[in-house]
Image (tube, rainbow over all chains, first blue to last red; front, side, top):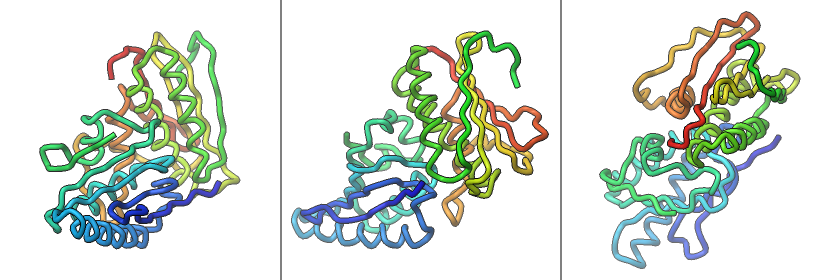
Length: 121
Length: 142
């Protein structure tokens, strides 16, 4: 059963959109992470050009499934990228069927609002 | 296996290859909801089943679609019991009690996640591979 993950910039290029499945079946490590961080860099730069502040937005609008490797990449690679760039990190549009509470998300990601990571429905 | 579960049982077998783990995960989510669990708790059941099935597929079966992963679901004393087994070589499970350190390949997080998502997670003796039993209480709180 084939699963895929597409990583692309939003039409306004200010956020990174994840489309498909964020699972072991669709992730090639480390190539997928490299591609994700490259898109993060582009989105962050474009956001700064428009708003004068560094904010990284990762948009899960068409993600069907997230598994532990996906959570791990978010908490390790994406968070580290944001920290290294002094950027606020915001995750938006969690899929309805995978919408755990803020507490649970913090568990998954080892992150919390106190870390400057913001979750938005 | 727990004997005489007193209620109806659902048994599924899925090909031991990535992608099929969604199906038992969805069944677990629906069953937990029907038992009166909160949406969050049902979502946790879904994620936990998905993680354990992924382990059974990858580590227990080598992602070989000719093999199968078996999933039994039933209620026992108002608890949803989910048993997931593979036909691999088995392993000595060690459930990390704290966050495992991030691995260079970003792996090694699934078992801990499942442990945190359900009320009980155990590895009963099983001589045909690996058997994982998870229990989810019907209480509405997460």
